[in-house]
Image (cartoon, rainbow, N blue to C red; front, side, top):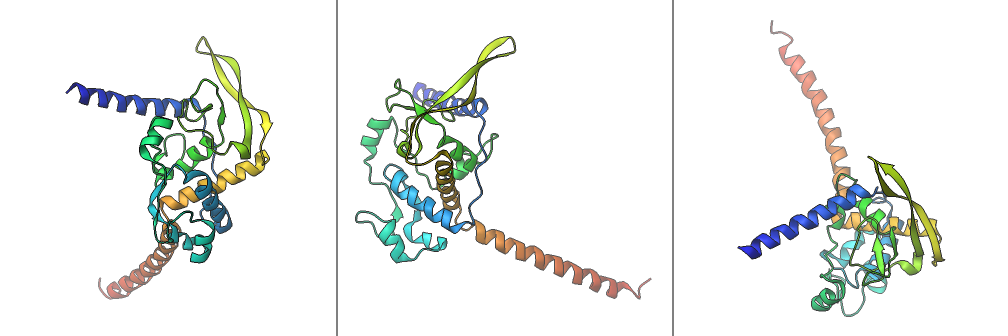
Length: 251
């Protein structure tokens, strides 16, 4: 019973911590790229090169990326590594026990991460777009990194060579009679291989792919929905005229 109570308290603590992080930092708006095939293809490339080493996407098969305009041969040559096959699920090769030892927990599956992280601060895409752009050096942390959108995160900044190293800048402001530190911007400590604009675009592509991956049929569903609404509109017009013709001689 005590163990059950402890687990419940930990769960509520994690949820409260997530809410506090959301309330304490504003999420940036992610670009909507779910119809931009070149951006999604680049996002897929970034995902398999930087994310799939630790995170899995076990609800997604490699060959589903044919929907992004890629052939099976292109997928096999550019997005499938090791002995995986094009029809396999996108599983990480990391050992779960080693991952737990290194990061404190096994890295979560990312198949539905863009849908699961939505909150009052914005959509899941907004959260991921903000999260991947707000890492900063923190020697006090085991990984050497911290994050403004997810304080005390266990994940290192895997894209740091692209972005470079930055430090957040704060100013003290008075709020309700107390002085609080308010985030004001970033100071670039060392450059990365990309400019700030290029990095933001790359993260936008990656987040676009994660958003597409969370519901690959979304674009088809929207297109079908438009045609269904058009059909219902036409059907309603004919039903209205038929009804008028049926009752015109009845007083």
